[in-house]
Length: 301
Image (cartoon, rainbow, N blue to C red; front, side):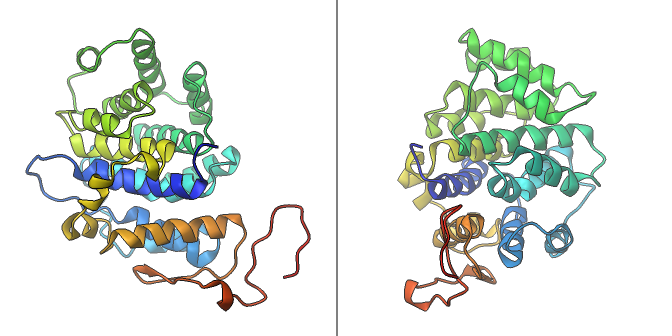
């Protein structure tokens, strides 16, 4: 792989945060703590526990009456940690995603979450193939009556024809629909996979909802390009107000959360975060039960 898994996970988290905060529109701030809450749940349980995962979201204002686009963003951020943790196992990934969003009763949000999380998982696996991507997403979504698979197919055809961003906007509906947001984020990523800066800059040009589209495109592109592909000046420019929307106070906390998540995913034990901060574990402080070993290799525990 070109980039380490740790760097890609950091890229996904920071990419979503940056994509959400890059817009200059004077709108009310979004309080999107779902991703951080989900990470804490995975770390505290050493894996996915649906009951405990849901309890984490009871600590924040989860308003089911908000607009569809903001519900989409909250849902994607809530499921982002699952996409990161189960990226190599599509069956477990889909099963757990559906468990989290089963109460939303919104088919388009369901399909949007599945498609975005699949793109993030495949980016982490470095298996993005434009020729087969739409059929893969359609299969991952499964049986559906929504327009999203067909809309993604249309966008993919535009990309193959080298159509520009304004041609894309002319082909989309004029409504501020969930499918348009997903389709725009998909176009911005797939057409410029190797350029995080350009992907996010075009995503926030979505006049209908730049912040939601930017967050989605940023998460996908960040997972593909890793932290190495994110401009340093961008993440250094994250101030306390922007970080507070995610329930954190410093950039280093995101880095620690990503490191801890990879440790849990790879087989480390007792990597427990403190509230808002993740404890730093020094090598000489590991107890005999805290170990990491390569798969299929016998090691002392």
